[in-house]
Length: 241
Image (cartoon, rainbow, N blue to C red; front, side):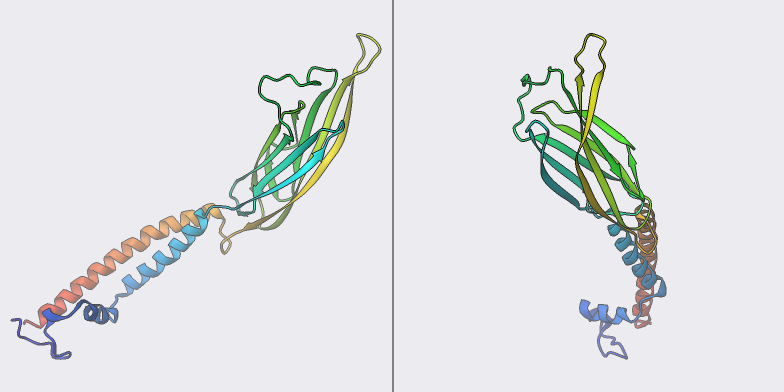
C-alpha cells in the first residue's frame, strides 16, 4: 500500500514532509476556519486595547506658604484614558522638612489653625468627591487629596486643580470673640487629559466585545480544523482505494 503514488504529485501520500502538507493544506482552508482566524485576531486586538495599562503623568512644584514654610506639591493623573473608564487623580502637599511622628512642632497648638482646600474642575469629567475638599495642614506635615474621575466625552479635556490655604485665628477682645478666617490661593494647576475610544467603543464595550469575540473565534477555529482534518484524511484514504 505504501508503494502507491499520488497521481498529481508523484509522491507517496505517507511520505509527504510536514512542510509539503502545510503547503497543500494552505489552499484548502475552509471558510469557517478563515472566519475563525479573522474573528480571533480582531477580538484579541480589541481585548488588548481594552486592558492595556493607562500611563500616568506627574508634576512637582515648590510652594511657599505665608510665614515662609516651603511645601512640595506633587500632582499625579492619568496621561490618557479610555472613554467611560474610571481613573484616579492624587494631590500631595509635603513639607520640605517633615517632622517625625510624635513631634509637636511650634505653631500646631497655637491660635492659628491652617487648613488646605482643594477643588477639581473639568468640563466633561465627572469627579468624586465633587466640590471643595479640606484637609488640615499642620507645620511639618502633609496633606493628601484623591479624586475618582470618569470621562463623559471623547477628546481633549482640560482640568484645573485649585489649591488654597485657609487660616483661622481667634480675634482678640474677650471670650466671646469670633474666629477670623482668611483664604489665599496658592496655585491653580492646569492638567491636560486625552480621552480616546476604539471606533466608537468605550473601554468596557471593547473588553466585552473582545472577550465574546475570542470565544467565538476559538470555536470557529476548532470547527474549521476538525473539518479540514476530516477532509485531508478522506483525501488520503481515496489514494488507497
